[in-house]
Length: 567
Image 1 (cartoon, rainbow, N blue to C red):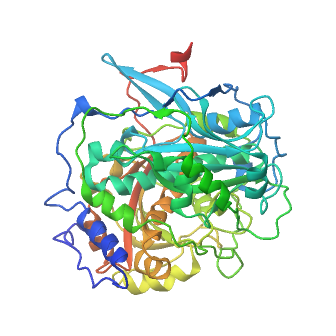
Image 2: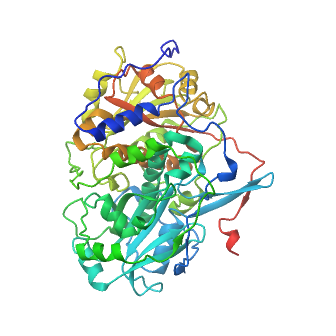
Image 3: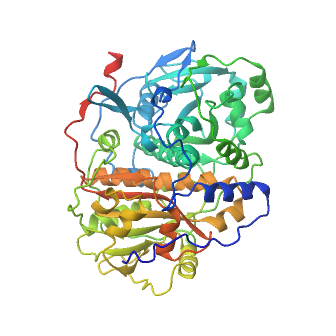
């Protein structure tokens, strides 16, 4: 694959302009693209004295410590992708402890040259962790006798109570959901990412939301629980429910999403989840003082006004369903002969996941492993993890194969929705072959576009990083950008990144299960990627890159147990 095409910017067609909010999204998206001659705006240096605290705490709130459960051999990792494979756990201290311990908790500490830092089950851009989590639940056996809103403290692995809900408020809120359900809400602190990445931080925060959605979904599935994103609660109401309206300034949290979690065996006749936040509850929460005060994260800050501008443009304040039925005409009917259960412990894979820091440059993976990974990120009926998002797939994958046994090196495309194929063929450059690879499962929508050694061009695209060329394969996640925003409006912009983050979380665990490693790549030259593919407008945009392969371990890094600091 020649690099001769990498000579300048892809030509962007006129964007849709049916609202000022959409204009703000397109302006932000284009302004924050990395280009060969310049990177997106940031400080350009590390302001170490103001590095944000990666842990949010609510001082003086009632704190409920959670248990630190041991790993178990069951359920298996592969079983989590199928519905109704694991008996549903009861909501109690043990299951709530496991839910957070296997999704958003600290997984280890590393130290080197006198420095020490934590890693978490959910990955984060730059290990900065802008994502916070809240639990909204009824009474929890052996933990709490009241319904309440809690903040999850990853540092303490504990629930910090923010507000008590009355029995009537909880009953009214839960009318439309099955018994024995709970809610988890995710929020973002943009400052944690903008401290390092400047204006591009809004993108990275929402990658992280997608990773966290995936992490919660996997942990819930290991407990026999189903997770679905709720799309009927406005950001304003969610802000009130969590007490975020009492925060202000650059360190304030911004509401992202609300997840409903309930047993697989709950009697549900539809795939969406609905809750009703009572007006009386919201009015009461506006007047009370929530428990605890948020800790300060930095002594000083550098503001990036465009982040606040695009965040306001994307607010979800006019609830309308984003849901699309997952029926036979919109999802693939996959029959994967490589999908036999490997009997690998899900809990071990989840807790041991790590981001690769470098790849060895020569390790290969088998084609069966490669196809299994692609099967698990492709929507099809009955696949529990990917169905957490209620909308049809908006993202397909442009894959640069370097070292996959049985596959020629080159450019491939995984078409994650039937409707994408015609649009991609129209948009991408002519002359691509669009052929099924030999040996590929017939039902897997994977196409070989061009045979070539793509290592050098992949490295250039990924901000000249060797890791993109040294793995078994790398990929760019292409979003149907114009079509998605025209259909749903500006509020869908962050949700496109959530979808890419969810795909990334699956790839992380897939690599771990295969005995290799992977890592997300947020630094890439957007329009160079588009030019290589022949994209000259906003119809498709690359939002997130990823690489998978055999890792190089750094022997200088010394591990410490996850919660050694509490002992």
